[in-house]
Length: 379
Image 1 (cartoon, rainbow, N blue to C red):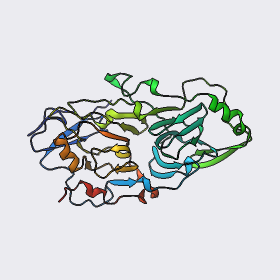
Image 2: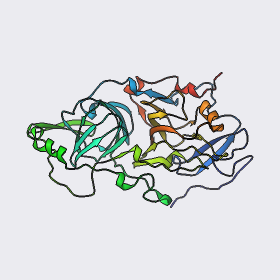
Image 3: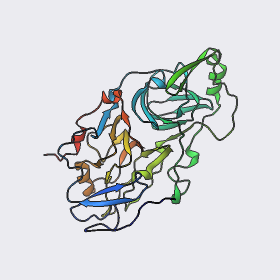
Image 4: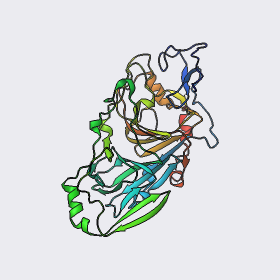
């Protein structure tokens, strides 16, 4: 048996509610355990916790411009390996022609986030169209391929050795955030029958299988995507960010964990979508300063104007390693104090990992090295 050491206490000047009615002239900083799920302490500082003048060493925050990665690849296993640890592998993939071979990941579930493009997915369970903003979950061992109708940019997130599940929704009930009926599954429709029974069904096909990080190619004299039926409760599925109804409070800035979309072993995937900004006069209007003490935080900025960051555009990503305090840029914090904006206009995907992410060479090649200086007050 075990339990957290817990003793809610207070000293000095403090607010009765986190993220609301801060003592005048102070900056709140949250320090917590297990991301935003464990015990926490809120400090009230005279100066912004991100008001550093220099930031030297391997803990520096990172920003990467993925728009500068332009090499196309026919296979997801040739995608740019951006960041990785034992639980998650994050890659960036550009595809502008139909995949010539099927893919099968035997190392873990695969999550595709379609950043740009549209087309068709063919897999064991049938056919499913995709568009920008789609999440597609492919169970470990699934055979699949994409046929883009428009050039397609994809962020792939492998749950190495584990599976994607939905978060517990607790008091708000099972229909919150998105209803289960928003999860679309593939159909054995005319498009699938055409690729099964037509010319594509009779010619030889290859299946690339990734197992323990190594590729094996299996050759067939026919198309192995030839199912005529299936039943069960395991399937590929799709949900778009446009189907997500975010949890909101007009009186309190909710933590990022309220926006969790998928959960895997030792990491979560969260989705930030447009929503009204808090309207209560005493509530913070921007993300609060917090110490990244248990999780690395990686964010892909998908579309819109990002209300807590300066000079960030779609296709860029940031990595805030575990161990330092971060939060909104000075300009965004000042705008929040004035309540200048009434709603957000951003879509972003956040991956919080329990163990550190290693930055791989393709990401380092497009890093914006001055990013740590973006919190400095402008002279």
